[in-house]
Image (cartoon, rainbow, N blue to C red; front, side, top):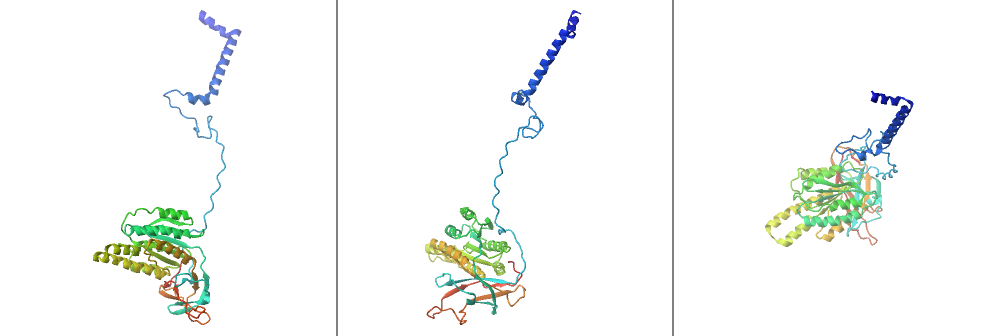
Length: 396
């Protein structure tokens, strides 16, 4: 009873004061703990896994949310890409047109471009019928070219020489030109799609180090490249670096030629690695009959390369030495830059899929005869233009 009686002291005035003091102390202690709550995770109890508050350490809400970092200004947007870059994998068809464009390269006996010719210096014949030239100009438009390279074990040392020399072509490119790089063995491989960056072209060429196959399916690769370029507008070029040999393509030679004949605004410039290889083998083995038989394939390949060029108005090159490769690439660059472009509406307006043969001649507009120099001698020159075209709905 005494104990209970003693506990009654809490109810008297003095006891009530003590009770108030104790409650105040407890409240202060509770407030101090709550004030230290943000630091409490560093004093966690060992062995007890703590659950983060709502919003988590990265959250925007909750009593323990980490304040947001000061936002830095966004970087400047990259420059806009050029309008309508050509794409190897894209096919676009434009309105059908009846205008026939013919690229013409005119060179002297030394292979140099002959400048200063006028519209009246040219005559165009389609299937023997003269045509009226409606448009005439010197080609100054940006070029769109594909560097198509054979990269296989056969004739590999000479392919390396050609690849090194191909930098001479890339060096001539202007900022508005487009170039893609493709190599082929069993099948074509796109190293870089159309780009205006010379460094991308150099990088693509530098990736060709060690060939993985001996096979060279040229017909498949060239057919595929021609197909991809069909939907690219404007004048297109294929610089074909190849031995000209084909191993076992699914596309036949005849089918490839028909496909090339059906092209529009496409010129092929082959550079052969086969002649240098053939002459090196003959110099090493002499008149060995087995070697001579094997070299027959390379002679047939030369004929194929010449045909590709002739059908499209290009020119085939057959270098024998390493130094010639660079000269050939420079000649191609000059030929592309310096071409006369003739255009006419054919008198035969039927788009019936027939192949029309073309012939371009140079004349003296005053006499209608051949061109002569100041001394009255007939000038020696070469006129290079495609042999014909397929009369169909053209893709421009």
